[in-house]
Image (cartoon, rainbow, N blue to C red; front, side, top):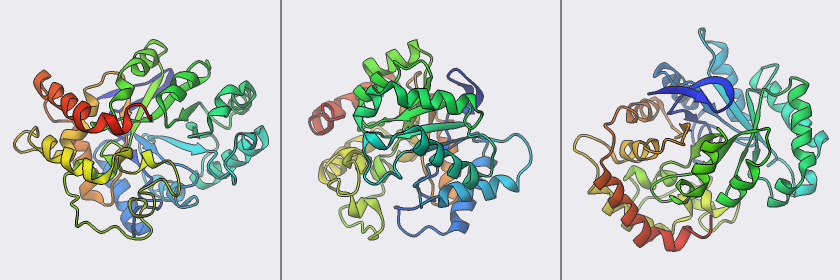
Length: 328
C-alpha cells in the first residue's frame, strides 16, 4: 500500500483503508468478535484509515473501533465518521449547530476520543449544500476542538462539486468503482485542483465486483442487498451501486475476462480504483480477517494496462452507464 497526504489535513494515510459499515450492521449477521477481528487484521496489514458513521449499527461500529484501538500501541490510524442520518425525518432543517454538535458529542463518546479526526455530513439533502450556516457551524466546532476537519459524503457528482466550493471542506466521499465511473470526469479534476481528499466508497458494488455473487445467492433479511434493492430504506445507489441486479451479473462476467491470472476479481476491482490519481483512499469493507488482508494485498497488484482500462470503460458505457451515469 502507498502512503500519502490526506488532502490538506496533517494526516498520512494508506491508499487502501477499512470501511466499517459491515461491522456495524445491514450486511447480515456479523458478530462483534468477527468485526473486531476484521479490523485488527486490516490494521496489522498496515492500513491507517478507518471510515465509519454514527448510524452504522446505531453506534456499534464506532464502539468496536474504539475497543480495538484501545488495545493497540503505536501510531493511531485516522478515523473518519459521519453525522446527519440520525435525523428523523432526515431533512435539511435538522442540520442545525445544536444537532450537529449533539451528533459529534455522541461520536466522541463512542470512539472514546477528545476530538474527531474527520466528521463528514452523511449524504445530506441537497438543500444543506446551499446553507452556508451549516458549514459555519462546522467551522465553529472545529475551532472549539471537537473536530480536526470536516468533509461531505455525497450521492451525486453535482453535490460533490457544490460541496467543495466551501473552503473548509477537506474531503468528499463518493461512490466510485468500475460500475460508477462518472466521478472521474469533471469532479476528480476539480477536487485535485482544490487539494480535496477523495474517499472512494462502495468499491465492489456491494459485492457484485467480487465475482462471487450469483442469481442463486440469498441475502439475509437484515442485509441491505435484500431490503434496499429498490431504494426502500436509503438511496438505491448504495446497493449494487444502483445497477439492476441482472445487468450487474452480466457485466461481471465480462469484467471477469480482464482479471489477470492469479488475481481475484475483488483485487482487480480495487486496483482499478487506485489507477485514479485523484483517489486518496478506497474503503472496502470486510466480514473477517481474511477479507481484510485480501483488500490490503490488492494494492500490490501491478498497474492495469491502458487496454484493460479501455475495456472496462467500454463495458461500462455499453451495459452500465444507461442505468447510472446521469442519475448520480
